[in-house]
Image (cartoon, rainbow over all chains, first blue to last red):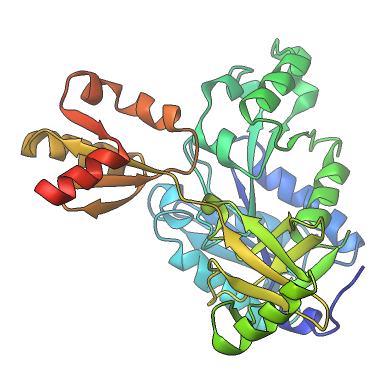
Length: 212
Length: 158
């Protein structure tokens, strides 16, 4: 690896967006990512977006997984996509504040409030973003070609453990997801049991943190 | 992986232009082709035309531009080049049609700009996916798709 020595002090923290429908498991995924990233020595902070509360932020602060000071809450007060795409100023300010408070922070996870399939992140806010759907929402979701499914840097299909209980053909769902995304990354996760998390962390290390 | 942070300057700036010119004679300039719809990124990983795997980041207050010099060394330079932005040009038949077209474009969060009476949509993906959203407007004749030639004709004759 050819790397300039000064990079660790000059490059700003990478900003990683996590979007997806209500109940798809975004917060559960963050709860899996935090220990996995900390274990790899990633200097981390988190921003959660909720509609009119700090529910998800409080859940993470109480989890014991991360220093509560490193979790910021942003309340959208309106449709969640308005503060990750149309005017992401509130989230940009929250991320800037975390970088000021924790110099050297490498990665900021930014969890959107639950939204619909049209939800996308502004590149002004995030460097890389994933869209999380789950099998219990229906295996036809990839075929519906929502902008979130198509445009995300990576698509995560969560709750794979539920597939047999909700009549979903998981292999076909994955195949259709890969097809509509033209071969761009599709990952399968089961946050309840921690399956698939390592693959996502490796993607973050490679594409976002540039560690590999 | 070659880790790069920040933009050194523009390739047409006099001092950099001279340095790049010298390197070109030694076959030392590599180009990093950035797709137009990716140009807004502050952090990305791409491979140059010579196969160098580049992990690039820029400061939050910087913007990547066509011709940005990202690396300048004794025997090598790396310059960012943008692909051409694909643009879909649309002309509404009358004011009422223009209102409908404008409403659709806004509601769909399309990136647009205006060229006189022509709405220019900056495409981030397949044109067919965009056209599908306003098929009725096009097929009913309320909105016309313009070719580049038609755009020039409009400019000349209004």
